[in-house]
Image (cartoon, rainbow, N blue to C red; front, top):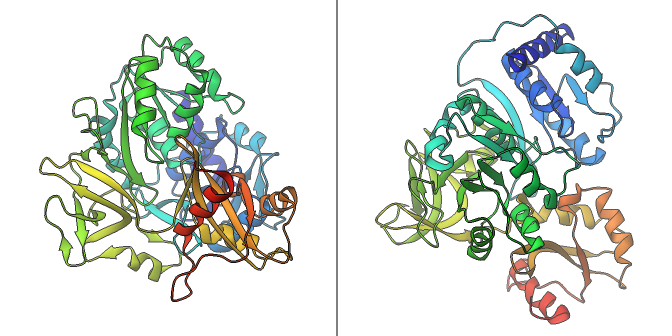
Amino acid sequence: GRLKSAILGTGTGLLRAGLQPGDRVLMRLGNTVEFPVAYLGAIAVGLVPIPTSSQLTAHEVAGIIDTTGPRLILRADDIACPETDLPILDAADLGAMHDLPAADWHMGDPERLAYIIYTSGTSGIPRAVCHAHRAIWARRMMFDGWYGLREEDRLCHAGAFNWTFTLGTGLMDPWTMGATALIPAPEVEPAHIPLLLKRHDATIFAAAPGVYRKILKQDTKLSLPHLRHGLAAGEKLSETLRGHWEEATGTPIHEAYGMSECSTFISGSPDHPAAPGTLGRPQDGRRVAILGEDGPVRTGAEGTIAVHKSDPGLMLGYLGAPEATAEKFAGDWFLTGDQGVMDTSGQIAYLGRADDMMNAGGFRVSPIEVEAALTPHPGIREAAVTDIEVKEDARVIMAFYTGPETLDPAELDAFARDRLAAYKAPRGYIHVDALPTGANGKLLRRALRPIYEARHGQA
C-alpha cells in the first residue's frame, strides 16, 4: 500500500510540474528507491520515462537528450548530466512527492508508448528502444518458464535499476506475483552478497554471470539454507561457472536468453531445466524460430534466433530510426542477430553472435561506438576493439590502434573515460603497425585476438 501511494503521489507531482501524458522524462538517478518509484509513477500517469545508466558521461547523456527530446530530467546530485535549459527535479523533490494525493491511472491503448530504454546497435549508434504498455504482460511467461516464482519467494537481484533485467526480474515481476524484492544497496560489494542472501532468507538470486564469478572468487562453500536456485541473463553462462556455483551452494542456475528489444523468451526453469549445452526452450506462449535465408530451417540446422512479431514483449521500434527497425525484421520475425540451433524437443543451443557486438559485464557494447570515441585522439590514426577472454570466464574490451608511436595507456584510458561510460572503456591498449583487414580492406575484428595472444601469451 505504501509503495502504491508513493508511486501515484509521484505521478501527481510530475503532472503538477507541468507535464502532460505522452511527455518524456529522462532519468539520471542512481540505484536508490527513487528510481523505481519515479519510473512507475511516470508510467502510471501516461508519461514516458527514459531510464539511463548512472555510469554514462555528460557527453553521452547529451546525445540521449538530442535523440529523445525529454521535457524534464530527474537527477541525483552525483550523476553526470550536461548543462541544459530543461527543468530538473532532484531526489529531494521526488521524495516529497510520495505523500501527495494519489493520481488517477492513465488508461489507454496497450500499444501506446510506455518507456524508452537504450541499447547499443550494430551500427555503433546507441539505439533508443521504444516499448509499449503491453510489455508487462509478456513478463508473465517468465514466472514459470524461467523463475519458478511463488508468492512467498524473496527474490534478490544484484543489478542496477536502469537495466531492464533488474527492473523486470528484480522488481516488477516479484511485485506482480506478490513476492518480496531484495536489491543490494549501491555500496554492497559482490563478496558481501552471500551474507545478505543468508541474512534476508533469499529464496531466488538473480544476477549477470559476472556477479556470480566475483562471488565465487572467495573459493568457499556458501551456506544459503533458503536458496532454491539462481537466475542468470545478460551474457552467456559458462558450464564451468555453473558447476562452480552448484558445488559451492548445492543449487542450480537457470539461464535465460533475451535482449533489450524483447526481454527474455528462451530459458531453462526448475520444472524444465535446460539440457546440457543449451539455453533451454521457448517459454510457453512464445513463438520462436531458427531462420535461414529462406525462412525457418529444419530441426538441427544452424540459423538466426528469431521471435515472432506478435510477441507482447517485442519493442515498438527504435526511436527515430525506421530503417534500423526494418532491418531487424524478416517478414513476421524479429531477428536477434545471434546464431542458434534447435533440437527436436525445442531446446536451443547458442552458437554465438552474428555480428561483432561485445559483452562487457552483461552489457552489449558496440565496437564501432568505442572506436569512434578513440579515433579523435591526436596520436591515433585507426582504432579497433574487441572483447577478449583474458582468463577463464572473464572477458574484457581490448583496444588496438595505429599511430606514430606507442601512447601512454593511462592517457588513453582518461581520454576514453571522458567520452564513454566506464563499462564501455577498454581495459588495455595495444599499439600495432597495421590493423588486420580482409581482401576488400574491411576490418577483421576476429583477427585481433591472435595479436593479443602473441603479445601476452595464450589466454
